[in-house]
Image (cartoon, rainbow, N blue to C red; front, side, top):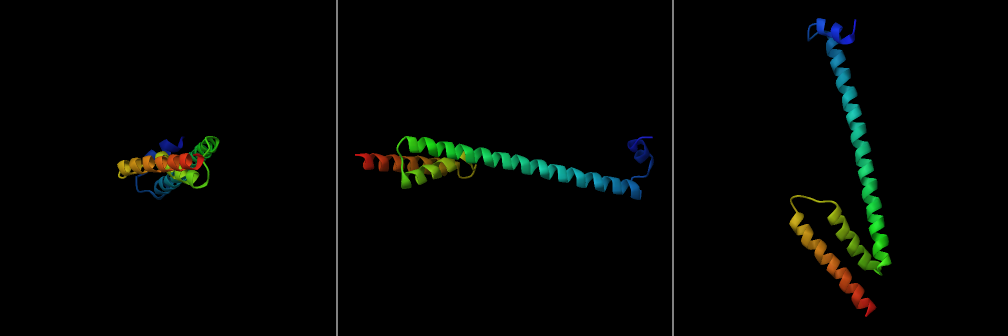
Amino acid sequence: MGIIKTMSKLPWNHPQRVEFRRRNREQGEAKHKATWEAIEKERYERMEHAGAEYMKKCKAEGYEGKELELLEEAFALELVRDKETWQEDKKTRKRLKKEALESKNKRLS
């Protein structure tokens, strides 16, 4: 006889049935936690890779030092979006990119 049939014949508060549900819940929570951690790790690695690629591109365009820091901060604001501060972040990104470009142009002129 299968486990489900056996469990269905027991009353809902039977110790074996209660223990089965508890173990099942613990196993499910552990699997969920492991899956969630793997997803978060993969997302973090993807964001780190995108940031590194962006910095390479900026260096190739001629940005240096403080300019790169400004662009990195702007990219971080662009990459991670927050609903509450989205408009403010958008303005900050635009300002940071403008400052970096002005600094680069001033340095090269």
